[in-house]
Amino acid sequence: MKDNTINKSTLIIISTAFALLLCAAAPATAAETKGKSGSALYADNCGRCHSERYPTERTDKHWKTIMMHMRVRAQLTGTDANKILEYLTSSN
Amino acid sequence: MNTGFKRRVTPQRSFLIAGIAALAWTFSIAVVAQAGGPGVADTDVAIDQEIDALKTRIEKLESERAEERDSNRRELKKLKDKVARVGEGDKSQTDFLITGFAQTGFRDSEGSDGSFAFGSFNPILLARYRDRVLFESEIEFEVGENIDGVAETETTIGYMQVDYIVNDYLTAIAGRFILPLGTFSEKTHPAWINKMPNGPLPYAGHDSGLLPFNDLGLQARGAIPIGNTRVTYAAFVANGPSVATETAPAASTALGSAQNLAGVGPQLEFNSNISDNNSDKSFGGRLGFIPIPGVELGISGMKGAYDDAGNYDFSTLVLDAALQHSGFVDLRGEWIDTNQETDDGDIGRSGFWVQGAVKLGGIPSEPFQDALDNVPFLRRFEPVLRYSEINSDVQGDDRDQLSMGLNIYLTNTLLVKASYDSNDGDDEHGKYDAFNAQVAYGF
Image 1 (cartoon, rainbow over the protein chains, first blue to last red):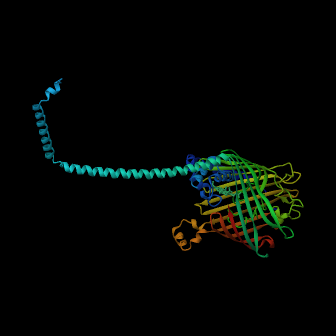
Image 2 (image 1 turned 90 degrees about the vertical axis):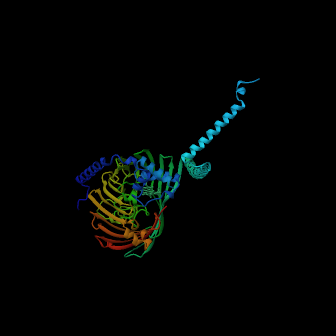
Image 3 (image 1 turned 135 degrees about the vertical axis):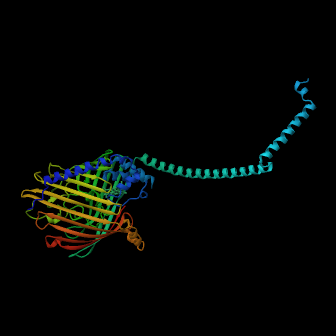
């Protein structure tokens, strides 16, 4: 039987690499994100999992509900989700 | 009654005044003439012309202003309507909508007759209270076959959960949710999103495979922005998998019949987590990292006892990666490792899949797009290639599969998919080719 268990050292190496990558990338761009517009955030986030959904597909009220659904599913911050909602409801 | 003034204006004096005025007039004419200026007639014409020019200018300004006023009025009306609509929504504070997806297909594999597959209809119900609470549920209607080959209507709850938005960075969830293990289950399994008619081998359909698809419990999830990057997290506690009983059909268990082999420990059951069979809960979660838009890396796992006595653990570690480029390239994959403790030692099962897809219409090459001008329909095409593999300590369980697919997007969420799977495995049952076709719609 070959050993297929989760190797502890593998896990530690992967987690460390992950943490290092995180630290390396984070400070470089610290100032930018807050200024991103709703349409830029829509472009960055809304095509990551599925094809683009157009603002004209829904009414304002339904977009509010769907953006709550997507905020939870796609793990968006509240600020980003609200900006995207503003973009969707001003372009439908 | 004589005033001094009247007395002074004598006829002689008025002659004198008239004389001086006449002189002054002559003098002024002479000065103007000497300065070379236009005559009275000329001045009048110039003034008239100037007045005309001013008039037309005023008229033009007036009409411009009227136009501006009209367009402002139109804008204002639009805004007013919009505010009224938003106001209505806010007044009711709640919303309910049905969204979801549906698919139907055809499957033909070596050694069996081709059949039209029934497909499934998966409405998703969303009920929102203000901007704090969301009840969400996916219900799957499907027609399956029972052991005797007789059609049986199946209704499955994919998830049924309540989300409570705690703050910008944290959402609390209770209920039956899709487990945040890897990304396929949570993020790409719906038929209109999945770029192949079937799931990759480690999933082998969305409720059987190496990993449990959903579970009952509590979850905390959200995102922490770090500069332009984002770290996402999800942590859960849930009932966890259990041991299959006689009544639980093998088809709905991990890896189906492949695990139902004597001497390889108790059969894991991922779908009977409605009430926990032991006091041990399963714990797990996922950490995701989005270093730049279009790239996501994730690490996830879960661990917990599955047997009634709570002595043996089922645990898993999953790594996932995804890359999108300019909306036309989509690369993603997962590596999955699982471990099941048993009386006779540990049983390890692992697997991975990688997939690449390119939307022809998005390729940013001018000559290529010019060539597509001849057959614009080709812009809707998306060829896909996927390789998946599962490896197991259990003899005869190893499988691999190469799938070639083609998607045609009729709209952004209505697509026709076709794929050809070439399967290979340890035993003869694992070696076969299959053709799948599917029409999928996200609504």
